[in-house]
Image 1 (spheres, rainbow, N blue to C red):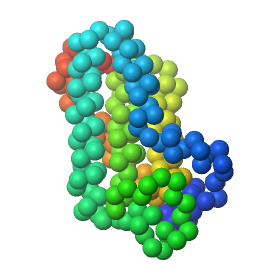
Image 2 (image 1 turned 90 degrees about the horizontal axis):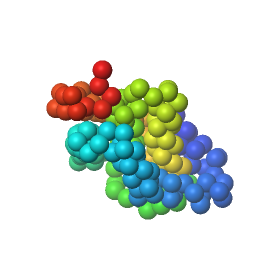
Image 3 (image 1 turned 180 degrees about the horizontal axis):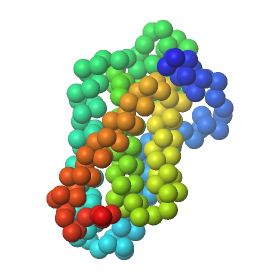
Length: 187
C-alpha cells in the first residue's frame, strides 16, 4: 500500500507546476522569512525573555527530534529510500538528490511537525483553531512534498509526523516546567 500511494503521489500527480515548485518548497531554507516573521511577532507580543524561553525549548525539542530520527531510528530500522530501493528506483521520479540511504522516519516530517505542534500548543494555543490547523497543514504539505519529489514513502512521513508531534508534546510539558511564569500559552 505504501508503494502504491508513493506511485500515486510521485507519478500520477506529476505536473510541470509542482515539479518546479515543490523541490524549492520542501527546503527548510525557503522558510527562513516565515521563521523571522514569527520571531518578530513573538518578540512584539511577549518581549525577549518569554520569546527566549520559547526559542530555547523549541531548539532542544528540534535537536532531540532530529537526532532521534536521523541518528538512531533510520539506521536501526534501515528502510531504504525509494531512490535506493531497486524495485522502486527504476520508475520513481527523483526531483532532488537521493540524500542518505535510509528513509524511515522522514526527518523533514519529524522536524516540521515538531515545530508546528510545539507552536500550536504554546504560541497559537489561545488563537482561533484555524491558526493551529494552518500550521499543521503547512507541516503536512512539506512532508507530502517529500513524497512528490521522490525522497520518502508516505509511511515515512506519517511516522515522522507522529514522532515529531509526540516529541513536541513532551517538549511543551518540559518547557512549561522550565519556563514557569515565562511560558507562552500556559494555562
